[in-house]
Length: 148
Image (cartoon, rainbow, N blue to C red; front, side, top):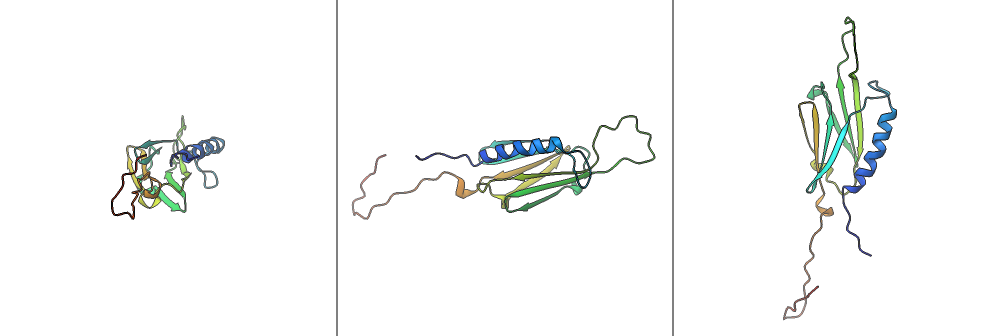
């Protein structure tokens, strides 16, 4: 049986496990980075991922790609120790997240932008994963039409 595959389907399954792991972890230390809330969706042949990083300076954002793993790191500065905090609900320190992406995505062409506290990644589907037509040729002099 021939099945049509969705190159982005595997990402959805892996993202679910990542969300569970992030909920269990604490926030903001080197050994336990804070959560980066994320949305991901498909726009045509592109995987779009947006991560909330309010208060993070763009120069602290670091994105590494190794094989099929994209590692995102950022840092929000800690508050001054001389302040008497009345409420401290916003996490500070290190933020980190790893995305395990399928082989059907072109990790060499990832585009990243940061605007209004949102980091946006755009990952195109690899050309080899896109559906394509195969031309059928004949060695006969008269090209007979092949109907499907």
